[in-house]
Image 1 (spheres, one colour):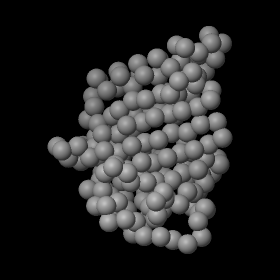
Image 2 (cartoon, rainbow, N blue to C red):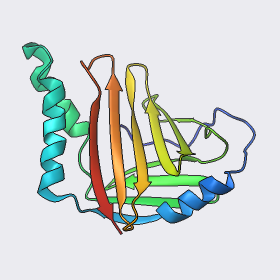
Image 3 (tube, rainbow, N blue to C red):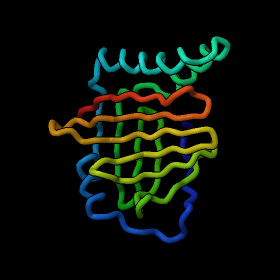
Image 4 (cartoon, rainbow, N blue to C red):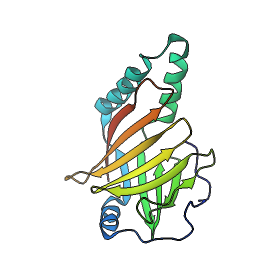
Length: 170
């Protein structure tokens, strides 16, 4: 996903984030480092391989390379909130948007992908949607204080969804 340009809102009037959404965001805000180690790194690679192995040989290598590049494991994730503005950084990639309303107002990234956020069932969802597919990052706070990042990538060009999970710790 490309770096987000300054937000172009799809809703003209700002709304307040719900009390439950504020509580979730207060708990998730912070800087986290990847602690999944070799086990999760291997599972991530296997998840990508499981998707591309179902593809035609002529596109398999290119698809593998693209999925590896666009789904890199971030060594650090930062979730930062200022009022209703949420910024999520994956290493050097930064994505910002409003948390206002349910669902949150969507913004459009520099490459035309829509970005929105929502809090549902005590989890934060970061949603990217484009013409050919998208990605949903779900951030879950674990009882031990770690966050579990569940990733779902979907596209008409993939034989099935790519799904994997990663662990991060403050």
